[in-house]
Amino acid sequence: MANQLSILVVESDRDRALQIVDGLGGGDQFAISVISESSGLARRVAELNPDVVLIDLESPSRDILEELASASGPLERPVAMFVDRSDDGLTRAAVEAGVSAYVVDGLQTHRIRPVLDAAISRFSVFKRMRTELETTKRALEERKVIDRAKGILMKSKGLSEEEAYAMLRKTAMDRGRRLSDVAEALVTAAGLLS
Amino acid sequence: MSDVLTAGFLPLTDAAPLIVAREMGFAAEEGLELSLIKATSWSSLRDYLLLGKLDAAQMLAPVPVAHALGLGALGGMDVIAALNLSGNVVSVSKAIAAEMQAAGYGFDFTDAAAAGRALIALGRPLRIAVPFPFSMHAELLYYWLDTLGLAAPQSLSVRTVPPPLMAEAMADGEVDAVCVGEPWGSLAVENGDGVMLLPTSAIRQSAIEKVLAVRSGWAEDNPDLTRKALRALWRAASWLDQPEKREVAAEIMARPDYLGLPVDLVERGLRGNFTISPQGDLRAAPGFLTFASGAAGFPWRSQAAWIGMRIAARTGLDQAEAMAAARAVFRTDIYRDHLRGVSADLPSASQKLEGGLDHATEVASESGRVILPPDRFFDGTVFDPD
Image (tube, rainbow over all chains, first blue to last red; front, side, top):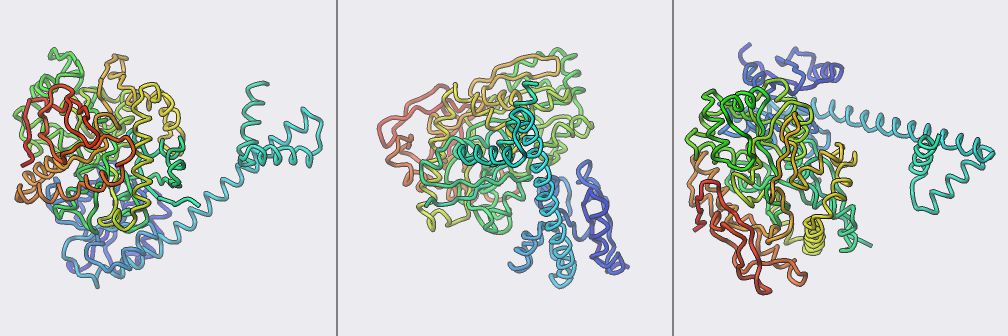
């Protein structure tokens, strides 16, 4: 169908890519292609010649797409970041969600809007998941290292678990440092001395 | 209570003034809490700045100029200080280096004309990577090759590759040469993927490189924050230009929050002592990276005019109009207003001949004299901004 909007999703994570495709209606309304990023990206974009490119705002590969946006770039196709054409609220929402979209110059806003709305909602979910995952991971790592530090103190100083914890806590307070930093330093030092 | 300024940077050696201002307490001493955000691309840094998620950002000097010329979306920027002069290298892939060596080229890391002629003499189409379409990397590369008779960028195949991916692009055989900020050139050497040909300071000495950019009008609306930020950065830059401090700076910069690379790699650009090939050839590049000395932080309007003239020539815009628009976003007025009273060098003029100084030269400043560093183009061209 000549009039169907073609969308290119640049996403290296397969699950995320599939979810974006789902979010866009599973490919019924639009012609959707997915490529994983970086190597040869500019060439692939030129070959596929999409109307809209969706990419994670945090992706380092974004700068590669910038050459498409400049008229002097090696690719003749005029492309503008959607934020040129759309209303400010939509732009802000997209940035908050962490999605950037490159849209062929002159494409009407009412045709882009549903694509962006769907992309924004997907990327918002990803962003929340990423924050949760990172926070949980960090907390787990910190807990692990605190446990090891407690173990070292209990063994070398003959303390109970509570006493060892109290000692770490007090040291952290006195030095104005985070508990996990003190624990980390102790574990590293103990490793060097053993 | 201190004021908070949120600033963005890319993991590059020349982000040092921002990082040092925070880590060595120069911001705190000005009563400023400097919150730093590491970005992954120049486009995200630009978007975050223009949409108000950042107050200020490290920026490639040509980006605010491009916006002033109507070549960027989302609004305009003001340049309120230069963060550094020079700091990039041109590297070639191992294959190209081998061909150049076979043809008798000696890799002296100094003579830009000889290096360029040796590269052009290979007679093959060149695929060259720059980090962003609007960058000093692109401007200096084009100037260099064009001057030597290879029409640039027309006869080059230019790719945009983010700095952290430059080494990989050379390893994959995607590009023949790159121009990139440190430490990413050193990383390519370390990985055995590239050989350094020149520091960009061999193409043009003391060229403006990164700037501190804010949204148009932001500095006027936030005079206190602007003053604190400019003073903290000036003090950090002055600290960084004491040679013995560069080692400490490398240690700080190498941390995971900032560059996350081995100290040894970060130190090379900061000290201007390079390992240029995987075989371990050493070369020194004096004046490779300057932060403060010789009024390095002063955002000369003539540097902006040169960039504007080059971009206009390439994109078919009116050159006189482009130069005027470019000059207007380099805010020497703001820089002067806020750094008066500290001992920063404040030149009396806002423009100078670009490329006119063969040697360090004294010129008039608000407090007497300031010594400007040599600023030659490799071919001796002098650019008159008027």
